[in-house]
Image (cartoon, rainbow, N blue to C red):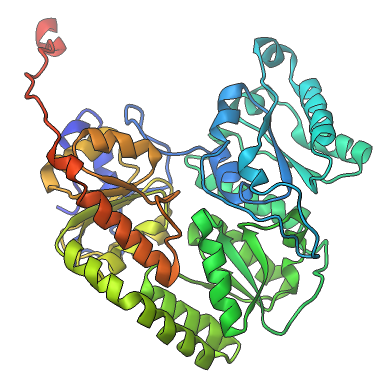
Length: 481
């Protein structure tokens, strides 16, 4: 059968539709059910729509103050959860005063019960005034709705408009409360739509060239962006605007002046690339720069658009000579090791083939928290017969998977990492990274090194687990008879 129900999920049989076992004879439309509400009783690892907007789309912008309109819990959740480092360099040659401002500061309205009863807009106005006083140098202030403020109906757009007129500074509201969609993907959509409608086409770049690109869906996780920028610069391509790694607020406004949009994270930000193409006629291409093979192929594809393929070939030859010997060492050490990619989105199909073809690893399966059907089609196409493709796996299913499939390494997020460690196997952070960057030629070596270090760490041979008896759980149905 092409679908599998984990033993631990038998009380929620609907979960069977979300776990697909690849069979090459299955029709193309045979995919796990996805982008739907979490089944009650399944302890999901998903993020919410607010996480999609603040945690992904806007969180990497360097010169914006973020105000989360919420009780303190949501504010804390939106702080420091990703490695989105930023420089102080601004496109006009000036300097922003604080390095990594976007991950050092976050502001919240700290709503209490009385605010829920009587409304929190007064508190939000005061928070904007206080933010502007404390950080007068920011280029804009962004406001975020959360489940609480979405439910009580606070009008963030009205407050943003009122305070923008009073302060003379851009203030933008993002109405993506956690419940706005079944996954954080809805927050991606809202963030793209807001930034496109409010900013794109409103500013002009300091200068342009015939080789300008928008690098879209690149959030500079642990320095990914800086590597890619170096590659493009050496080829002769100028990154005019980044959406949104290490970028500034005004930079989004001149995305309409690029010659090509290069989309990196295909799930979170293809939306804005399509809108720019529809309105301004700027074409876009989806790319993948993970691993040496994909990075080389996609650099050549982008370079070919500008007639610079020879320059790309020179760069690729140089980089492969640099990383080849070390990568070969890790290939020998990692060959045959079983990995499961417990990803939020596109990394599940970005990494499955490189791990198998370039490092000789065995990818037992892949999963995603928020992918849509097109993403699962790519995952399925890049896996071998009998491998797992899972939508929204829960913690108990992950534990069963580890036990039944003899996994050597889980590639996941911080929510899974320490739970997996308690089961006696390594878990590598694939969202915020361990020792990144992980993109490009050098990045793939960093990833291989971290996988080698994690798997061969002697601590796994020192752990001792005591056998415990199964708890005596009464059979309620039998007792009822």
